[in-house]
Amino acid sequence: MSDPVETDRTDAWADAAAEHLAALVRLPTVSRPDRDEQDAEAFAELPRLLERLYPRLHATLEREVVGPGGLLFRWPGASPDRPFVLMAHWDVVPADADTWQVPPFEGRIDRAAGVVHGRGTLDDKGSMVVVCEAVESLLAEGRAPAHDVYLSFGCDEEVFGTAAEAAVDALAARGVRPWLVIDEGGAVVEGVFPGLQRPAAMIGVAEKGVLDLRIRVEDQPGHAATPRRGGAVARLARALHRIERHPFPVVLTDPSLAMVQTLGRHVTGPLRPLLARAHRARPAVARALAALGPETSAVVRTTVALTRLSGSPAVNVVAASAEARANIRIQVGETVDGVVARLRRVVRDERVQLEVVSGNDPSAESPSDGPQFALLARAVEATYPGTVAAPYVMLQASDARHFCRISDHVYRFSPFAMSRAQRDSIHGVDEQVDLDSLGRGVAFYRTLLLHDDGA
Picture 1 (tube, rainbow, N blue to C red):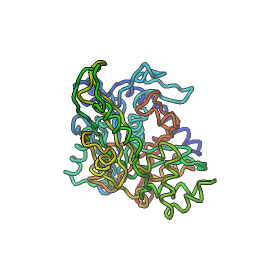
Picture 2 (cartoon, rainbow, N blue to C red):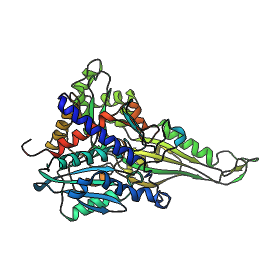
Picture 3 (cartoon, rainbow, N blue to C red):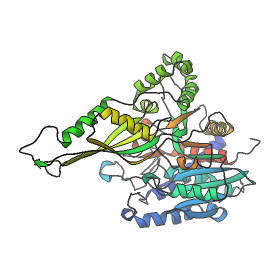
Picture 4 (tube, rainbow, N blue to C red):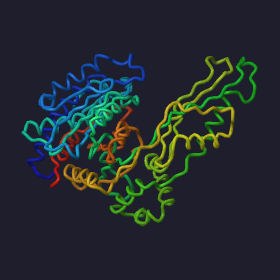
């Protein structure tokens, strides 16, 4: 931010956010499919710690617990019309301390490097903290929003839990239809396309569907000394090989076309002519994106990741069954049923069982040409000057998808600058957030919260 006074304020917000985030990281709120395996005390303590860290927020806003422990706040504004919902979640995925340079739940602040280390700093306690810092700072200044604001903080997003659904149920029962919903998702990134010299704020206008698929083969067991050809393991391996060799076709969806057109205006070099005529050359643009790397390839197709394998219980036993699990991210415009049907055609083996463990279709799409997206773009420009705000389809799943039931304007954006290494650290190792991003994140949400109809 160019104003020195505002820069000083951003630095102060960053310092406070870092201290509070570090304290929250030290609570290992690791979600498990079986809640009995979670650290119950950590989950119980986090709401209490949040209240100590943000006393004005808790004294002023109405708070209720929804679902198994989600937090839903209401900040009454001058008008109940056109309410906002600001979202985050405070559960995290597991972390193996032996693989981290800094212990994942130490909550270490490295001011020399300008980062806060720890699981959840990016996904997603960091987002919750900058929302709360923005609210707390505005309350300290005696300011209030023009419209009602809801804060929805989930406790089970990482295991596809029910807290966000319970929040939606509560709002729907009261007739609340949010004008704007914003949750975690895209970030401020560099180098989206070759030749793009400006940073890009990638704002998710939809998210892919998610499918957990079990691929299983059953066969006659026996002794490994007398094997038969084509047993369960071999047949499963052949099926997986066919799936790997036949990826889903590439397609440039409408949201991805809008992304390409937005960013293409700022690209120089050999890609510029192709991106400039993207609306007339969709297949060629889709193929170009698929060739650029895993991230852009995932933008233009349904992806299949083979993640788990199991077979014989002993080295000298021919397996009675062999099983693989596939994590599939479904492209906008496709469905769970359609994906499974295509995989059956690819496998071409009736003895290979395809079973849907869980799955949901892609979310509804939110517009990128209306006042809500324009407001987000203005907030980005105010906090990351010179950054291009672009729509995109989020590759991961989030709690935001549940809010499509009560709002037509659901967006996914974390107001942090993230390097390639930082993006890889989400659900990976050595997760860390920049102090500068924390300060700018507070400024981003303050800009949203101070928005009024005349802004």
